[in-house]
Length: 396
Ligand SMILES: Cc1cc2nc3c(=O)[nH]c(=O)nc-3n(C[C@H](O)[C@H](O)[C@H](O)COP(=O)(O)OP(=O)(O)OC[C@H]3O[C@@H](n4cnc5c(N)ncnc54)[C@H](O)[C@@H]3O)c2cc1C
Image (tube, rainbow, N blue to C red; front, side, top):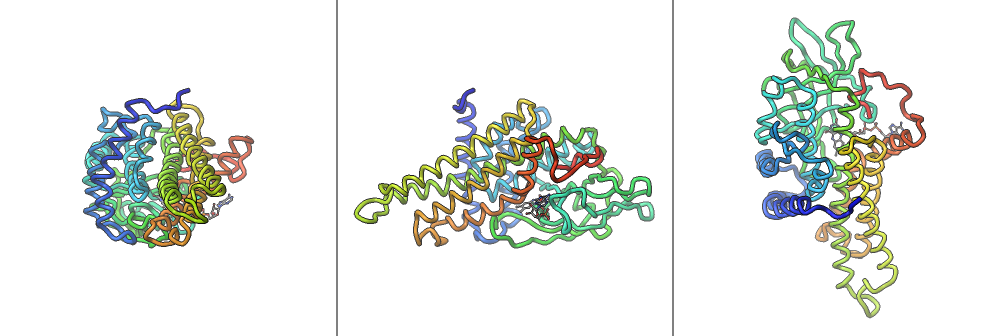
């Protein structure tokens, strides 16, 4: 076991840090912090990430991807501001799913533009009436007069308002026999237009989170996804990776907040000395640094487990939940260390606090993650008894 990054990992991490500083942060800073980026700016941003092959980190090099291990991807992903990371995760998650689940012709048609960041992708599972329980989806694919049509709404979908391609989870209602099977279809916006809207939220406000409405949206027959992969394989390569990645977004925020608090504590004086010299401040700084390092290592360890092919459902759930909880505590404590200044938008901590709050929900709420972890510990499922194979690809 080696806790040091290799020289290659350090080089990758440093290269992405420089890119963030020189190319990505200026795009974010050039726009209102509380409003979504214009789509052309987002495409520019994705274009920069595409240069680092981060629009397809999970694909092998031969398929146009970066061929990264998931641990290496995590190390790099941790360097990205969460306003970027969350939307990248949606985009590259769509790329990974198309690569894993789609036919050769679907891949050939869609992947080049998505990988090159000429088009934007996302995945729509959550609906107004169901989120944690994907088997509750109501969106239906029906056959009407020879055409396949999609009816339903997808809600809280990252990239929904700007996407060109959405992988939509829905019920197959093409025939009575199939009624109720959960399937996925590719909705290409140019061919199958649909309405969408942005939803204003507490944090990550430069990114996109919205609703898509499919009101008889015509979907070409060859956009059905006939996945050959089993649910377990997809689970390993999506949820088990996404959760520690979201955890690393929490680590990014916590580290940023900690750095601000540490710096401030060495400058601010109270009762005749810098506050860094007061014992309670030192204890708080120690707690914060411990929580950040523990979060980072849990996330790295879960990703390394995925790379080794070891069961990682519990580890990835534990990592994300711990990192998100820790992040909220660290940012809160950092705000305290700055006193009244910590509450001002000038100090940037209040934005981090709002952004951190967003991370507790996607890719499994903290409650669901605890249940997933405990299911592995106990062997008893508290939230679902049986796991029929038809739904396994969408299950937690
Ligand atoms: C920033 C962000 C990005 C997102 N991106 C996407 C995306 O790209 N694609 C997509 O499809 N969705 C996306 N989502 C939606 C997200 O996946 C869902 O919001 C999430 O799964 C929770 O679903 P819900 O909001 O419907 O809450 P519900 O499932 O209705 O849960 C409500 C509450 O009940 C709790 N709960 C539910 N079941 C149990 C149980 N068995 N035991 C104990 N507590 C329980 C939950 O933890 C939660 O506190 C995103 C959400 C956010 C915030």
